[in-house]
Image 1 (spheres, helix red, strand yellow):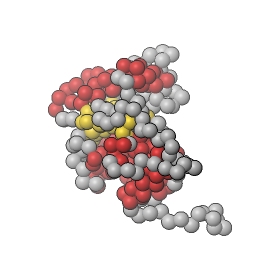
Image 2 (tube, rainbow, N blue to C red):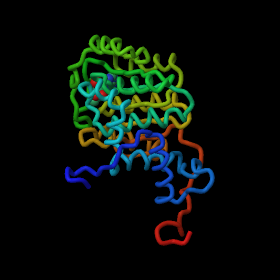
Image 3 (cartoon, rainbow, N blue to C red):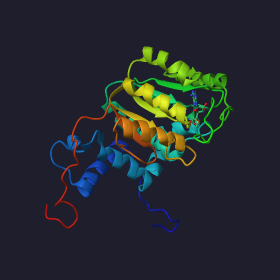
Length: 294
Ligand SMILES: C[S@@+](CC[C@H](N)C(=O)[O-])C[C@H]1O[C@@H](n2cnc3c(N)ncnc32)[C@H](O)[C@@H]1O
């Protein structure tokens, strides 16, 4: 530690290499699954646990947010959206990780956002996709006039919340940035999503950020059959104290009905759908770990 309180450690330039190093370190330290076929070994009950640990714990306990914040690509994207988003920095960093490192491993598919408000998280993903040369397009769905009708008690939010936005201004900003891979879809999801999915092909990442129970339920139920194998369904709200209705959807639809288990629980709840093929039981790690001879 230096006198000014900084550690003196340099942020690695190559985040891909950093991820790889951390993955290997984590494999050895945590589950000791560094035998052949590590990818298959890390898939437990439909999700890649190591990838979830890696994204989540590096953001929650490590330097990853700071490291990414100083990455020129993220810094440029963040500067464009920081005044246009309610999404926290750790969550934006997680979206960055998913788009940069994980989407390219899936079959091609689009990015769909349910709940865009002033456009920040959608613009971030579209900017990253463009800069990284990804073919994925970003579809940003919202009324752009505020919350539709909400359910008293189940939802904290009220009809008309988040009305302070302008689709016309958003479209102008998008055009100034040259993001022709970003499409705003105005209206209630219940009125727009089916027709949209009929023409855009499969989805690789769904960002569900619409807060209220009916909308989260509709979003998940509509998008899940459109996902590429192992696609990422990223929930912004269920672990927020003001979105119990969103968590109810996770409990009722994803867990109880569809039998899904989360891949990641911080800063987002992330699920893979359809679940990844692989082990159905946890790997036997008895006899390995600190203090064992294995
Ligand atoms: C928290 S805001 C989204 C925040 C945004 N992702 C950001 O970057 O700040 C939630 C949005 O969901 C939208 N929404 C909720 N239910 C909806 C529905 N059924 N149809 C369309 N939009 C909906 C609201 O209009 C609101 O703008």
